[in-house]
Length: 427
Image (cartoon, rainbow, N blue to C red; front, side):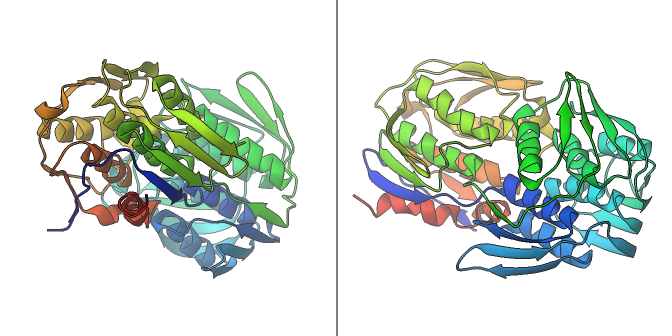
């Protein structure tokens, strides 16, 4: 049986290296492809999700070279690609499925996008509906509203489109990034309660850095056709990945320095630092590309909407188990359509250790217990990288926690457990 068993520990000092951002890497790859130019991407993340994206882009005529030691990738983009009955497999990489759909729309041909069994359970109808409005033909090859899908396009000539962002902001980001390569100026309107808004802001920031021109309105964006024009781009450290070590510091009352942590991050998950600061974490030092934080021996729970930062809700769940007061999270119903139903999965695993987890449709409530009331157990990870990384934090306090299938972290943070084990080696 393959598992990772963390050991309880406290009051340590460690230095952790955070990988490049998955979200930014995949956006940068798509933007580079759309540019049609030669672009150098620095500090990229090479993980399952980004490798699926790279493989697909190569299949679509983009020339890509990667230097593993320097983490530098050179891409010669293929603007408005032409493709003929091409088949693209993207595993369970949600960003690849969604971003590639709109990239295909800017080109000419027919392509099939498909993934693993879980990807086929993750809805894509809202994006497909918007692509249909743009004049792109989208066919469901199995279940209506879900991958696999077949896309047929001859470019986009439409001047307006509506997007429902209530399930995923990636639908919006997908069309936004492709829009400068459409044939006409276009008004992109948002309908429904848009989730994870900081990811949309991140997309727009990157588009502007790459040279796009757009006008922001209250519930829409107007984008004019314009070539992306950039030669080099630096990718930030991943703030979702950093969340586990920020939480580790608080839980274990320890001092941790995180390298590749950008002070002026464009990532929404950087807000998780503010959440932990309210709970009792302390910043000892904050430089442009690193931060040092210190935990505390006792901290209170917190109650908040995590609609803007749902990917770190699991991290907070682990922190909440050891607080002195309850923690309540709401506005994160889209956690249910991620790599797994993350709310139900958290309930299953926290219940195994005798935790008090109350499940809501759009969130959860955790009532902490005295440490001695928790018990060790084998914890399932559901082939979900964030389940594995967040559940491992429980073992900092509770003996005999065994996190199953730890290799699933390769989706976004391949060497997570190597970095985790640094806490047992440093003084």
